[in-house]
Image 1 (cartoon, rainbow, N blue to C red):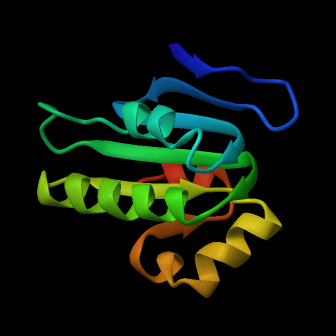
Image 2 (cartoon, rainbow, N blue to C red):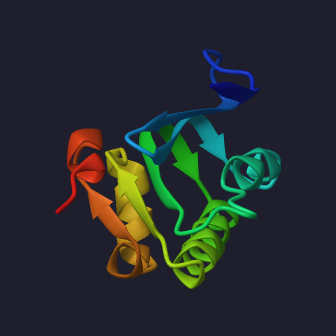
Length: 121
């Protein structure tokens, strides 16, 4: 497990990376914007991973701007090209709304819960 960033403080951003049944799980907390985007990019780096499977647990994300949207779309493209998949889990109301408005939820599989995102279906 790794932690990039500072968690637990308002406005701060953290990425905790774990694995469950061969699925890389990124648990995000805080705000995703141009100040924190590089930490998210680092957590999403799947270089050299054949058929990567990733779940991004977004239940702790309080804000996301276009930086986050662009990072998610680029990660989805990279993971898909490598024969894997990327799912978003439990986005909060405001973040889910942004994902819906820009159409990301039509491109990237968004699930209501982490458990659903980790399931094989």
